[in-house]
Image 1 (cartoon, helix red, strand yellow):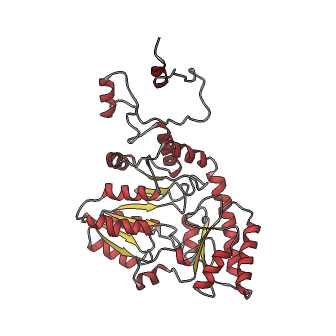
Image 2 (cartoon, rainbow, N blue to C red; image 1 turned 180 degrees about the horizontal axis):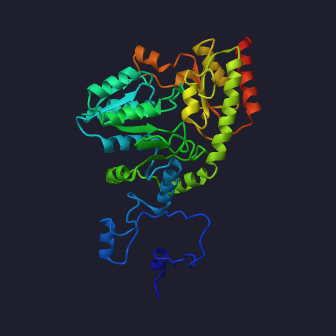
Image 3 (cartoon, rainbow, N blue to C red; image 1 turned 90 degrees about the horizontal axis):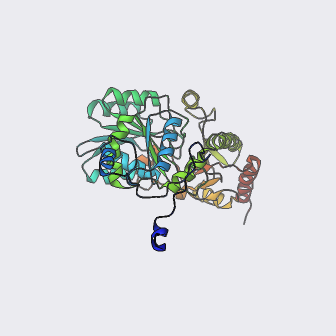
Length: 393
């Protein structure tokens, strides 16, 4: 008979019998896995036998999420990571070496700009940063400078500019560069039909949907993902299985949430476009968007994020943001609650004046992420906030 101290460290095995499967896959909350023999373990480590060895490399719960995401994005495989920024950083580190060159854009997410301009630059990776609207400049760089990859996003954050994906990817491939797209704003169900080599996503946003778990993913062709997998394993930021379970659960309502939030965002954008306190609205679903035709061509849905300029300037935009009652004054997007970013919180501090001008962000730009509240209540909240601006204190 085993001693009690042994029993608590080697508990009885309880697994469903054959043919009695759980409807929801369990969380494999274990760091280590074993085979019965050393030879079987070595075969698995050499890739000759399926299985798991150490959570830092992979685990069944995270693997289920990776395969789900790959299928929804329309690609072969996926690597899930601890955060969206981590997915970007590990992808860029895995794909580049000293002497390589990256083409990216002013409209790129702030932390991504930081990774390319500071972190990768320290390791000898060069870069060119243009506006996503500078088609002639893009082609000129690719013609004149050997480029390892083109990194872009569409729609961009926060001004909702669109990349002409077909044209940009074709240019990249024609000149021997990989096309890597941050597809977080558009979501997993969009842009898969284009010949993009790798997609990166923040799972913290639409995949989770609830704003209480963080994760990231890179999705692409099998040979690219397999080539990156060893680097991802040694960098040690695989998504934790409990977080993977929560994100997998969130994906069950992904399509319902995205469609409903997009419908509400369209209504809010149309209302703001008519509001006397608004100078301009930025949303791909509006006919007034300068790339409305491109949006209709390459997007199934215009998304849940919109931005606008408050007519009365920066201080009025700050007060408008603070006056809102149903919008949390914070970063992120894609969650079930609505969020607002005041212009003072939108990151353009690393720009020169000319880069700031090209970005399109003004001193009165406010960004809204629309949640699942009643859209009439959201519009009423926006109206009361503007009304308070107009009422002397």
